Image (cartoon, rainbow, N blue to C red; front, top):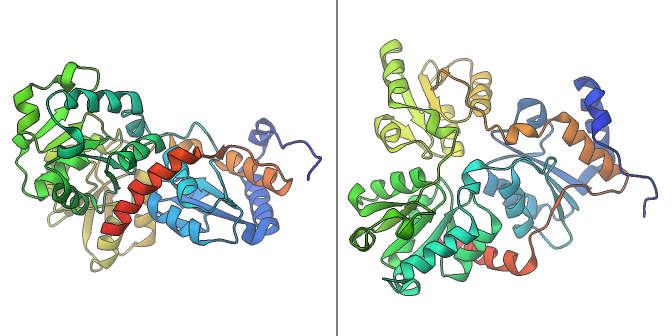
Length: 365
């Protein structure tokens, strides 16, 4: 048991990047296999450099849970990602988020009280447990995953949303999809569901702002949430690139708006975007509609291809950007001293219900 006091954060901001990098590396070597650092694709480059595992949020959580020798999982991502890691990891593993302010504005757009209110409102005209499957995007809080687990629902990712919607419709006739309306709409449309059969549920309004007829007609009830990064991309940006670069191929994330996804050549998750661009021939031209750090990383990795950021303005995941070298150094130095700071621990009952929702997805995909 350590007797030394915790390492404070504030003095670390007076240190140069070089000193911070050296201290992080020293701490990594000291901790060895006891600690695994996870780096999401959208993480800033200087932090991403220290990641032992990289990828999207669910992939990272699953990989980390397989590192059974790792007592500590340091997730350089955002809050909901660290929650998923805690849900899937072993009881002896501790998950740490370097900055607790690293959240997700989309995840915050759907909270448990409003979802429970929506469920009650829908129950006035429908038998929810018989007719509606609640489905949450993995970009959501643990208590919403638990809600889905308790009501027969599941989790989905941007790469498997269509498959999970197909599963949902095999269970019940309607889906309440949250928190991202665009992923739900784009995925539903790919399955052949007409736009008029996908209704926007606006939390805070009576019956989500819908009439009884609209609720009964809808096959998918889309929560009024969105990603502030991916909604920055516009059809005009695609038109501009097609005008400037003949033959350019446009690939976007399915969190983009319906019109953007319709006009793009391809759409896919962060992993799918990377796989397609990497597999493309040398000399091909790509305009990519997803977070800037990922696009810049691909551009550096493949100088033989023309890789462009689709939006003329900077589109960063600002909350993930909060995790910097100082915060990473802070948690690593404290681990070396025997202190755990910024632990993410999902309550046991909530974790069990959320795990059921995740396991339903994993059984399908």
